[in-house]
Image 1 (cartoon, helix red, strand yellow):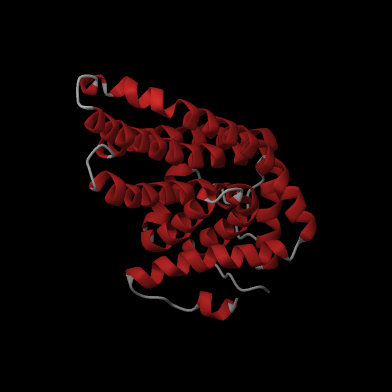
Image 2: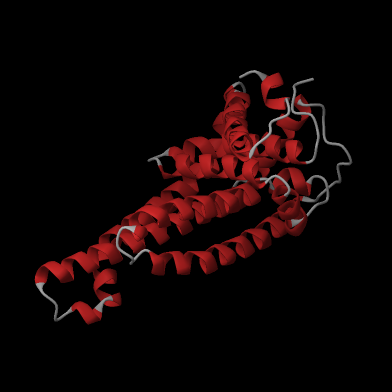
Length: 263
């Protein structure tokens, strides 16, 4: 990946979006060049990945029962009409479960792997010239803040996810437009969540990082949506999570106007 290309000015919403995608790819390149950090970063992802695979499997197992539970009005319909509405309901449940699952996985993994991912983020910053105006954040204080911010982000995601769940019942729209909106919403919240470590290192909390990312929303969305889609691939979340942390460090530095070329 050409660092100068990423660092050069990019205009237009589409260009900014794909710049965010390239930041994830460059984060992956930085990460794979550090084999020790690579293995270390996989440990928390494997733990939380096992938990969420079990949760997803449980949802898939009970999705027919859940679909029947929310569509009692279809009990007296013809067999084909009843089956159709319950398939749509089941897809809506799976869509909501996927959105909450991806963000929940990220939140739990960041909490479990806080010291591992903090180290990955620090190493990336060191290679790029260090952290300007860094503040010392005690481990337990960082963990509490990370947990509190993750809970807030999950609550916001649930509030947005409920209307999307309802919209999922609309034929055609629920299976085309809603997944795109879900990926955009999930991508935005992922970007906000993943840049936590570099912003904490600068003494900035959730409201500040959200405001700063909004200044270049297309770039943040490009990064977040790319991560979101990778997380939907089987084992993608486990393998990509540490690289996403490295890429998020690049995103934070770029958003703050700091260099992302290796010194």
